[in-house]
Image (cartoon, rainbow, N blue to C red; front, side, top):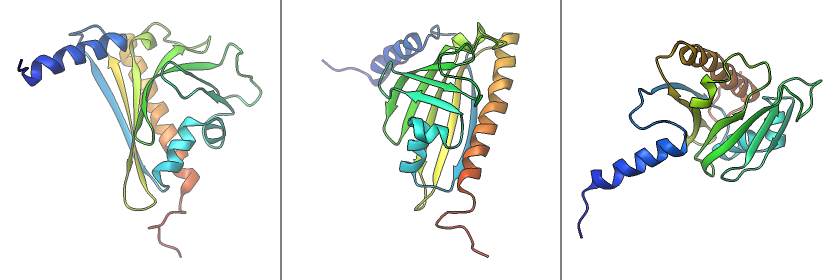
Length: 182
């Protein structure tokens, strides 16, 4: 039996949308943020996917169970503790080591201003090796709609993703294979 490519792909895309909590046919928007990081992909992957890595540049406290359905718990406040009301809990939807992983907010911090809107979005982070010792990190937020709260959430993540990439760049600047040494 022969199948046309579109008859196989469309059901998979609809299934992906259902698994990610996005209704099929919904008016979806994306938010893309990316930066070149002066470190090899293996190191950048480690910084995003391990407790020690995340705590070295992004958050005060972290815990990650890197598996499908696993949880990534983070806390930005050094005086806080994982498990307190300001803990951010993301669930890992998918991953391919040193290439990509996707997460969805499982539990926002108690004071998060847009708790309903965040339920509809998810994030995919891509890691592309560049010339030796450099990585392109591309963060794609998906599931945004024209709803005013969704647009506020998109702005929130635009700023947050920009800050995240800037912090990661600062961690390695200017120690890279192709950086000029003065």
